[in-house]
Length: 263
Image 1 (cartoon, rainbow, N blue to C red):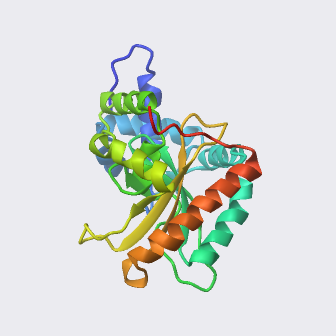
Image 2 (image 1 turned 60 degrees about the vertical axis):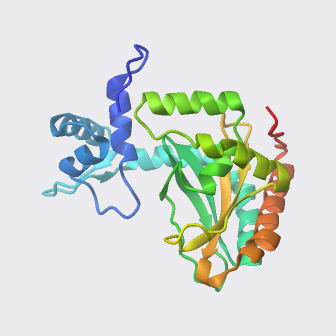
């Protein structure tokens, strides 16, 4: 991930790419594994991991060659999550939604060219393991990414897409952008029925939410195994219930974003 803008602090960007490389199911990562994930030389990764370990952002047990997120990184993540004013009220709203629909509810935010799961709410007495915190979704993944893209103005869409491509990331969903905006305008949620994707095992519905402290939307989604649900259930019950929950969250937080799907 290289950038030729002279304002870019390349070393910082590379260090952050190392921190982004970790996933929740990793049992630590070696320098070689980090080099492969970041697309950087192993010698560069070695310098970065040494620095990040010295600063507490990475940790490594004595005698091991595997790095893990360190206490400084955990602290920064906690402060960042705590600064989002809508998280606390969202807990009650989304927990009730999970119980009401029997689906797993998640909150996803954009992290470079992925949507990353920041929080999940599981229904009581229902086994629902769809995605865990830290799971990354490609920006081509319907419906979470489409809800994110569809909530952007045309100016925002172009700016983010240009930045992603300049950094070597995956482009946004150009062909489906207007379709997503039309779907959000007409029914207020994006539906992934799973009917046209034979390998997909879950249905999902997604709704964008715009917080005043963030400069781009986040997305709330509901998901359930295809074997346990029907398209009609998501169209008539889950999707509308999610839309109402997000509208309720907007009222509770005093954040009533007006998405303009016409520009």
